[in-house]
Amino acid sequence: MLESASTTDANTNQDAPAMKRSTSIFSRWIKRGENELDSLMQKSWGAPGTPTRELVMRYWIATRTKDHWESLYKNSPHEFKKYLRKGYMEPIPIEWVRTQKLAWQYPEFSYWETKGEKRLYYILNHALAPDGHRPRGALRPLNIARNCQEIIRRGNARNAQAVKLDPQKLRMYRSKYDVFQNDSETNSNEYSKQVNNIIYETRRHALNELAEGILAGTDHIETMLLLDVSSSMTWNPHQGILGPDGITRYHDQPANIVLVQSLVHRLLNHMIPRAQKQHPHQIGISTVTFSSNGRYVGQLASRNFAAESKNKIQLGGGTQVMQGWQTEKNTYFDQQRKQGHGRYDPVYGWQPTPGMPKLSLLVFLDGEAMDMDEFELELLGETWAYVTIVLVGMENCPHHHNHAIELQRVAENNPHVGFFDVHGRVCERMVVEDLLSSVYPVDAPNNEEILNPDFDLPAYSDLYPNSV
Image (cartoon, rainbow, N blue to C red; front, side, top):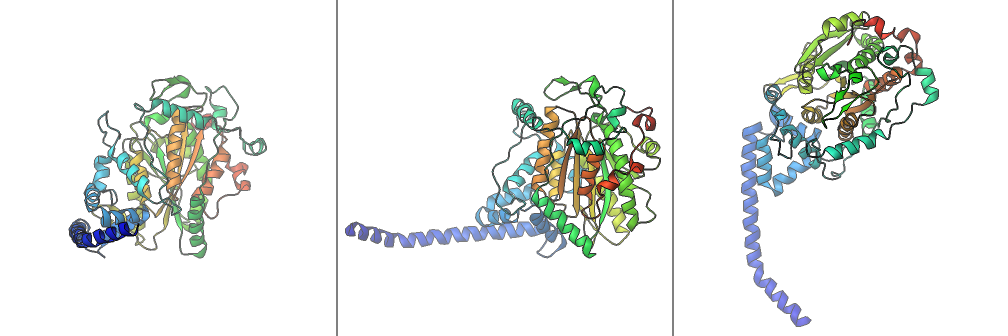
């Protein structure tokens, strides 16, 4: 044993110079790679401390990828260069949004549907979790052509989690003006079961931090609406809706747009008075709609809401949520610019400046957007925005629940996003209370305000006699 050990020591001593040379060569190679990367970063983003370089560094922190990129920089220069050139390390350029570059479809045989999906999953799988822990495992996308049965199975599994509304609370919150109660085609007067919404602890923490800033006077919020008005929102559930799996399903409920209009009308009754505390002359809530394009429709007011929505909101078209988001963003920063806030970057568009109010955005959509992955990716880097996403859809539909699973993942990975699922025949005042508790970390309406008869609505058929 001793002889063997001596022989081993001798061999080790003989190999030491070779190992030192190898280590030296490797170190020089790494150093040369780092010098090349430094040059490439400076060419792409400017020198350290310049506005664009600082913008990119803030993006690393916001997306929780700083550790990952630094690891690649030190250990895998080739990989670092690859993803730098692909643009993974920086915010989405406004030109890419305009041309919908990340929403371009890959060939049918590809594992990925779009470039946006591929980039999103890379970020999610390499970023730290919101609680600071390492990634939990490899997330993967599901494709309806490749994973149809798995999509249906997990959608049905989520649907099975739906429970009846609390009877005692329902007795208090139900209204004869809930939109399905006055829909001539809807036969049932029973409220649909709902899947309980999850508010993650990291989301609570983010809202609590914002609330502390508001109460201390160092922060405040502005509210806006973003509404999906695409053709799919107007589909009549009673006439059957063809799913991506080729099956037509029938649902006993109003069209999604009908529910959204009623919910928005109710929400405005509570949102406008809160906006007027800061802006006494404000008459409504600034609203953007999206379908194939984004469109700023001005401020929607609860007074004359039916006439206003009919005149201002145009229904129909495809579903490009990023077009709506970009319009929303431009509108918000245009308003803030007049107050001396915001900075415009020629490549990445509007950027926040210190002291700028946070945006509390309420989004309604049906989950059919082709660029949903790009939207999720964009929101990861927008720390000035707090977004409440409301998915409206069909009762007992596995495709709706599949959209819900994907949007729940958005909320799980981004504390600035809250997600709420609403489907079927809905108790609207319950939904309004939940949504406003997400929109307003301070001064959300209590149940006494929610149940105030003055804030209940007339029958939908009286407001919209010629609605879809």
